Amino acid sequence: MKRIILITGGARSGKSSHAEKLALSLSPTPVYLATARIWDEEFRQRVIRHQQRRGPEWTNIEEEKELSRHQLIGRTVLIDCVTLWCTNFFFDVNADTDSALTAAKEEFDRFTAQDATFIFVTNEIGMGATSENEIQRKFTDMQGWMNQYIAEHADEVWLMVSGIPVKVK
Image (spheres, rainbow, N blue to C red):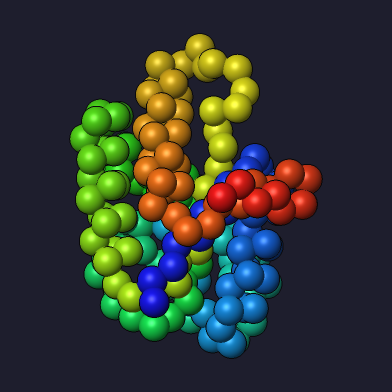
């Protein structure tokens, strides 16, 4: 049976660790689907630390955009994270918010058409002040709309606050 769970919150709020614990509670062999595009050496080291923290029970998949290329029927899949995934769409269409959002929604629909348990991790980037940077404002809009789209389709939504999960839906 298909199930969609969204875990959202600010930076360092405990989203990923909560999502990992949840995935392991639902399956002894979950899938970790990483959406990061490696931009620089510092980020590469961050990814390596995350990979080393997870144990051998995890199946690790790196996929920047086309999540639906992976058939994961019957599996528990942690997608970390929607923000980086949206970034890949956004910059690949030269910050065209509408095109990026349309492409991300279509890919989300294709991917979640499978019968699996999906745990999406995302950031609440629009809770602060409005940026002076036009590109950042456009991305914040796109990300917020994508978060709303996923939340609308989710069976559960959790907000992480200082390491504490708060059930929203």
